[in-house]
Length: 259
Image (tube, rainbow, N blue to C red; front, side, top):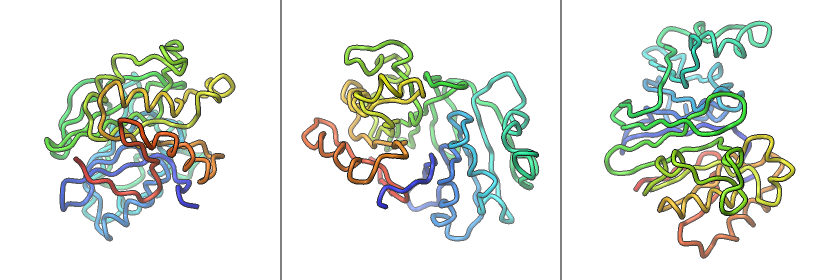
């Protein structure tokens, strides 16, 4: 299996340094200790939303339990104490402990849309459509490279748009504009949307269209359908071999240098 099965989690690092910002805390968070080489994590964890595949790596994050750790968790503001909100899924009887019991060094905070500064990165957060709770997309830059991150995105919920795969709405364009890399929800294909669009995800064709319209330099297809095989993902990438934007499929453990 080449592409793997861990759920959403991306670590961001300044050149030559360990990751200090983590986007989402899916099961992929269990792999971050490999990049930290046994050191405690000291940084910020930004959640796009609170679905299980974006949060359930937190209780198993080994580097977040080591002495000297600092894990500042931020999630979209929803009018509820953030730790209480996370505890709806991470607490008995669903889990032995609740978030505040993960250990010293953990904090739980809310985030509003707009510009923020974390760990030497500039972060721009905007709300984007996705089914089942407030969801943010992020634009992150260190002054030399820019990442746009829209892992769960349902533009079809705003209408069919020009291509039948959803609206190229302002928030998506602003977050993606000129980015060195767009990491985007690619769970479905356009042909699958009539049957599966109710789940709240995007089509590969929309992700490519957004990258082109917003002049992103590269597109990483992300959040693959769990049932899609490696060969099927490869075939999707081949379709865009001559596209004006470089298209590739993200896989577990992938490292991308920006710009």
